[in-house]
Structure formats: C-alpha cells, structure tokens
Length: 103
Image (cartoon, rainbow, N blue to C red; front, side, top):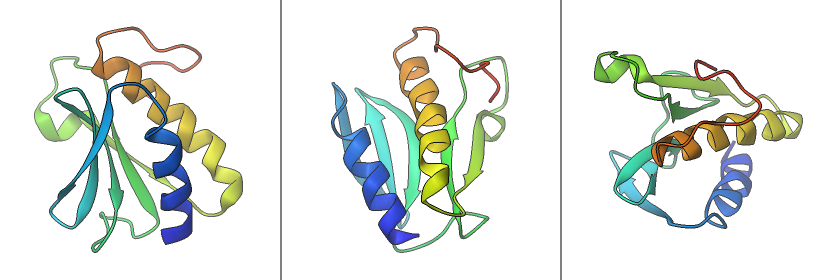
C-alpha cells in the first residue's frame, strides 16, 4: 500500500497549486487552501487499503463529503487518479470531466 500511495502522491504533486501536509498520521493534499485528498502515511483510514477524496459541496455535512477508494493493486491506480482528479477540479470550483460528481 505504501508503494501505491507514493506513486499516487508523485502524480498529485505534479498538478498546479498542489501541496501536501501531514494531518493526523495521513498526508493531506491541498489545492490552494482546500483539502481534496488524504492518503495514509503512519496510520490508515477506516479501510487499511483505502485513500480518501472529497466530493464537491452539495449541502452535505462535512463527513458526508468524503469517500473512500480501495486500492487492491496497481491496476486500481488509474481509477484512483480519476477520482482524485474529480476532487482536485472540485477544489477549484470547476466541474470535473468524465465522472459524475458523486463518484
């Protein structure tokens, strides 16, 4: 899992205006001042094989905006990056391409 998270982290950090900071044993990825993704570092999420990404604002309570995506193998990286791209675009207030907003 650590290797998969490193690969995803490297890809996320190539995007404009993205930074990463430690948060509660996780890596929090920001676009500007908005957190859009969390990857495990020293501790795992609810599912030890998952990453978290933030959905666009839709009058949901704070905890309802976050979704988990389980990484079972390297084949899941493309799907993870698609979801993270959706979250990244939403963090800037722009509509995402290719995925419904609730994915």
